[in-house]
Image (cartoon, rainbow, N blue to C red; front, side, top):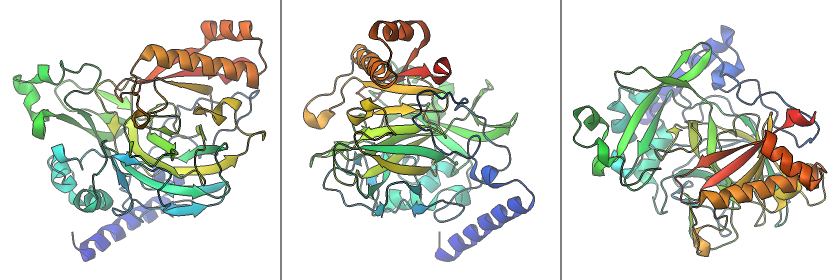
Amino acid sequence: MSDQSLSDVQQQQQQVLVQEVSTGVGRRTLLGAAGAAGTGALFVPTQARASSRRRLSSGSTPVLQPGVGRSRGRYVPARPEEVYWGKLPNRDSEPVAVVHSGAVVTMDTISHEGVLEDQGKDPRAFFESYGVPHAKVLQDAIAVAARSRHDGPGPHVVTGPIAVRGARPGDVLKIEVLELPLRVPYGVISNRHGKGALPGEYPEQFRGVPQNQAYFNQGGNISVFASVERARGALRGRLPGKVRVGFDLHPFMGIMGVARDTSAVVDSVPPTDAGGNIDINDLTQGSTLYLPVQVAGALFYAGDPHMAQGDGEVALTAMEGSLRPTFRLTVIKKGEVGAPKAAFDYPFAENREHWIPIGLSDPDGPEKGGNATSLDVAMKTAVRNAMAFLTEDLGMAGPVAYAYLSAASDFQVSQVVDRTTGIHALIRKGDFA
């Protein structure tokens, strides 16, 4: 697309935004964000909060091309020469932005679906095959596919890192998810060979069945295109086929992390003690993720944007689709109020309704020589972290805390497809009101 035609598209999109404001749709509709404007969760053990699964606002969903539409605080675009593709920042990475503690940042994030090699590495052609006009294909996704180096072992496109002044090893970076607008009104769900919950069975068992052949990509991988529609006041994903099926969207970032203290290549696929690809679908707008800082400046990054994901993410991917998240990044020093004690050593999260202790089967990651996939290990770690939170932060007696977890808390599978598996606890804040 020429510079002139891109300018025309941007002007048209800006006109749509202005028109919607003038007709009273309002800021939240323009963003396509979930629920009320987020102020971020706070670590207040005695205060219960409303459900984080709020419905998305009604109205149109504009395409958020780079630099088009609203942002808050520091805006960080996904430039092709700056993104990480398939790998994550490490201690040697140069920040693309530097902010003070407590700063608000808005980041453009790009889904890897549509830019990958098995999809032709041509987002315009890939999405056009599903009826998406060129004006609704993201220009930064096109640029990444054409100009960025896919030099990491994973598939993900990652924006950042952002250095936070004052962050030092031993601190916690508190990441409040303030807004999660959709950048495009569509997404993709993929299943690739040797991946997913049933490797060796699917997608192989789909072969040879005529109704399945339209979903296969180059190399025998499957991509299912999902459109976004509005129904009953919510944004919903709609799948193709003769069986009518749709589901509410709950956007969240699959990858949020800080740099690991290593010079090795950090694979974008397995989550670690520095966060990364933790894929917890409860981290929607209004949630908070706490991560132990490993390097000076923390070097925060985000990617793998999801529009919806079931617990387990069994086919390999969620409904992947580009988002424009807004975060507040705050440094918490040891001994300060503002973060659970467990977060100084291990990822921990919360949303309006739950505290979310996290368990990973292998928090060290493959660059340190391990990659355990045991859900049993992840479960035990999640229970230990939940016990530590209840006894050390809330002051419960150990036997009572253990009994409470068994009687009243849920433990959910985050995902089973990223080599390092994850389980997280959901401890209801309302139980402690």
